[in-house]
Image (tube, rainbow, N blue to C red; front, side, top):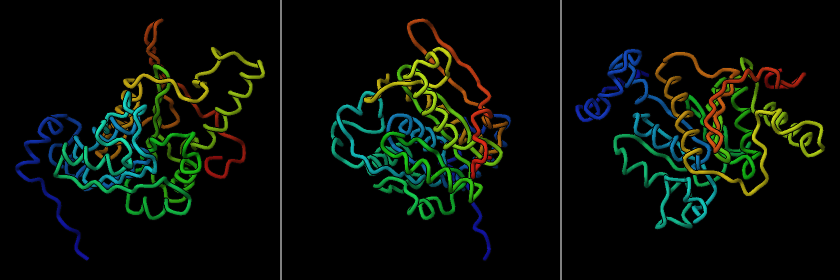
Length: 275
C-alpha cells in the first residue's frame, strides 16, 4: 500500500513558522515529522495539562489522551486544561475541548479511562512515543503497564511530574535506560528508610511527601513543559534525550536549583525490563 504523502497547508505554514526557524528543525521536514506523529498521553492532570497544550501548539498530528478521572475544584490550581464549567467532566474529554479550541488542525482522541495492562496495547498501537503524566497514586498499575509495553515494543516513554515547588523529567527507553519500575522501587525503599530514620531527606533527590500532594500549579506546569520538550525533540530528531538522566528542579524560599542526576544506579539486579 502506497504511503500517504503528508504536506503542510498554507495555514499550517503560518501557524508553525516560528518552529521552523529553529536551525535544527529542518524547516518543513521537521514540522511534517510532527504532523505525521501519534502520541499517547497517559494523564490529563497537572503536568499533563501543560504537556498537552504544548504538544498541540507544536503541531503533533494525533494526540491520544487517556484518563479515567473527573475534573474537581481542587484540581484547578494546577490543571490548566480544565475550568470551572467542566467540573465533573472526564479529564480526557475535557482535554479534547480545550485542545481543539487551541488547534483545530490536529486530531485529539480522548479515552475516558485509565491505562491498564489490558488496554495499553490498543491505546498505544501505532504510537511513536508514550508520555507518562499519570498520577502514580491513582494509576500505579497503568504506569507499570506502560513500562512493560515500552520494553516489549521499543516505544520510548517521556516521563515527568511535579511535587511541592519542584519536579522532574526523564526519558525512559529500556533496556538502554533504567525502567519506571526500578525508579519507583528505589523511591519506595528511600521513603521507607526515611521513615525508619536510616537516611535523612537531604540525602535523597526524591521528593517524599504524604498525600494529598502539596503542589504549586506552576511547578506541575514546568514539569509538563520539560516533558513536552523531550517529546518534541524525539519526534523531530533534535539533540539527545534525557537517557538515564533525571532533570530535577526545585524553586522555593531558599532559591532555585536545577540539577541533573545519573540514575543508572537505580537499576535493580535482575530486573526483567532493564536489568
